[in-house]
Image 1 (cartoon, protein in one colour):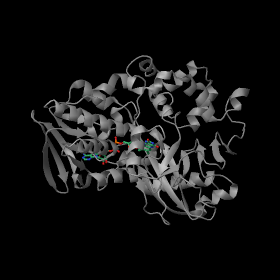
Image 2 (spheres, rainbow, N blue to C red; image 1 turned 60 degrees about the vertical axis):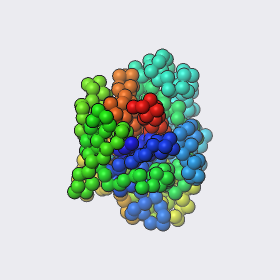
Image 3 (cartoon, helix red, strand yellow; image 1 turned 90 degrees about the vertical axis):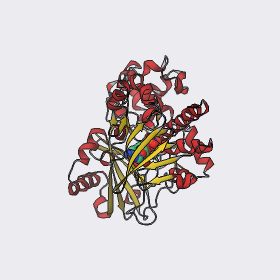
Image 4 (tube, protein in one colour; image 1 turned 180 degrees about the vertical axis):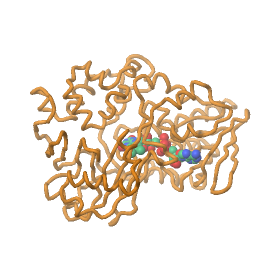
Length: 449
Ligand SMILES: Cc1cc2nc3c(=O)[nH]c(=O)nc-3n(C[C@H](O)[C@H](O)[C@H](O)COP(=O)(O)OP(=O)(O)OC[C@H]3O[C@@H](n4cnc5c(N)ncnc54)[C@H](O)[C@@H]3O)c2cc1C
């Protein structure tokens, strides 16, 4: 069997196929496994690192936790910092400590003013969802199917959320991103997967690295698939390896590349119209992240954690690596995380203007920033030819219109990746999709196919 792509989806598929006794070869375009799970260690000093891709796992990630335990990896807490976090919203800069009440600069009623954004999400969203959200496998049946028809904004309004609540959720929470263009089913899955968050000690790439190591020589790096052909009896995958073109043959293949890359692959015979439409219509969002090393964690002088929720062009600011807060005199990394259209606009700036643009706003947020700044690296996911963006982000109706088509095998070619699951945009979704695709193949092999 051939697996194209050594992200979590491809690695899970290969792992399961290998366990089931199949011969498997994984073709990976990059010189490393992990795809959108990417820990950056360069150019940072003092063994610092930052997560350019996926940051947090959840205790509710059943497949991820299974592989993490199997590989004996260590977890570090990814919850809210104990120190106050900063907000810079609507021109006001203020710190909020755990359980501290603030006067939010939003049009909220008295009761809402007493709640922080996470509690508002709890009240207007998580507590109002039907119990069936716990069984997301049934996403295509009522009542979950109906959730897919509404945007999160429409749903929250139905639950009585005011414009002020919507604005606050949109500006400050992960769930509120693209609030008017996100399927409520997608939001329910992102909200439902919250649980206790954690990261992996030493970097999240320990998971894909551990999985790839287990597969050993079966993972070939620097091999970029360009076309996949179903021969009627099996598959042929053509790939570029440096200046050469190579052809790989197998009984079946799993295509575990991101949606944006799948659009560019040549698949023969052509995929059915419904599948092509799903591939081209499922939205894919962008993210651009700038990681900046500072010579000391100067924000600790102010007694705050380093995290800042902003409505400024720098997006959300956070500190890396996760885990214990750095002492005031220790080096650290701050990141600016810009999402969606703003991420594409930022990525489009000429290289020398990019950093200037971020540094200026960082100074506004954290006075003293420029004086402490040492080095930076920018990761624009939209520019990465083997990612083509951050992740799939279904609009209302997209799951019900496209998900089955995205999952559907095409002859001897199977499909995996976060975009083929109801758990889109998550590591858990990627892993589950890989396991599902491996089962499809195992079943087909058992049936003599
Ligand atoms: C900025 C960011 C933040 C995120 N935050 C979180 C988070 O906190 N928690 C969470 O759970 N998830 C998060 N995610 C989502 C999560 O990272 C992804 O859903 C998941 O890693 C996707 O895995 P995948 O295997 O489907 O795809 P990928 O990880 O993209 O893997 C695809 C692989 O295919 C390879 N490839 C591409 N084209 C070819 C080709 N032609 N030939 C051979 N190989 C090819 C790629 O190099 C890559 O290794 C985040 C993602 C991003 C980008």
